[in-house]
Length: 262
Image (cartoon, rainbow, N blue to C red; front, side, top):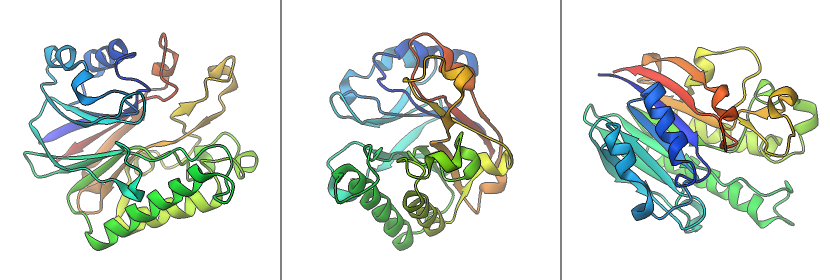
């Protein structure tokens, strides 16, 4: 069953209902995983998406912040939602397709502005969240699974506009990159985007602070699609839809796509 999957930090699903609908109409992924929905589940505009063929949804929500949802044209059943680091946040949802593929949708904490857990509680929470993800995958190693989401870390030197200038900036510090690598190794995850696009600068996020984000192009690849080794070779056609960052009232993230022949 070939299918195409997208992941997108939408930064308010109700505020950007129209942008989600446009993406679904223009790109027609079979499954889309959204993060930072900023909405209780019962307030998500499901009717709009159902009219476009996305009649299946599993989600976890918080009022005004966090929140993850999976919209699907294919039947999908919820198979779990973890609260890593006991934050009480809606940051993970997992669903299983009829072909047995499990999709994990994650929104890893951003970590605040200062990369020091002694003075910034949020940075400590981010590291603890990743540590518990790692331990979970160690204890229950996934198979036939895909992990997507805003992981809030750009791991490679060419995942940021300036490796040297961002080494002390949250999202690209060595300790975060190390924690993400340990999490990836624990689950046997393969970075599908970089499997398909192994070389070159690649970004999925550009700050709202830039007057002209496109010209400045100071981006980071914070959004990821991974797959377990048993199905990684089925992944292909990875792409980041940079143009979506330029839509009216955009999210600061662009959607990331991959297709799987399973």
